[in-house]
Image (cartoon, rainbow, N blue to C red; front, side, top):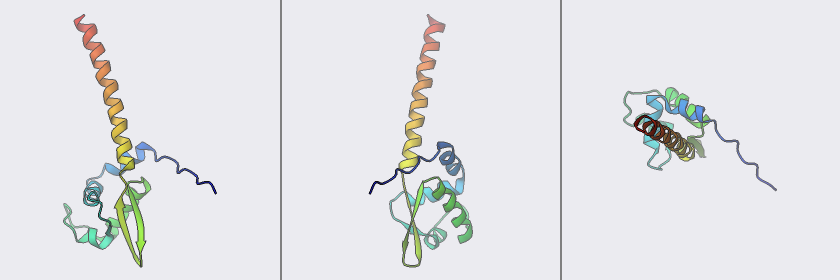
Length: 113
């Protein structure tokens, strides 16, 4: 039986998911590699108090971007961070940064040369 590869998540979707302060706070909470339930996330210290429904909405956005994964433990859903999409974004930004560093070095050489 062959396993199909999951299609890569579009980077724009990852950037959009990380473009919200509340979602960034949720990612920071999950970054310690300890899965948490919605109740645990709601009880934690976020910048502002959020309802469980609001946290669920934000987790769904993060999950659709592949940043957060959900597992079931009995009736409880536990969420954990999947760093792969963030690592991909970091590598992408490193490549773009290198490109611009090279372009600026060529411009400097042209102007000064």
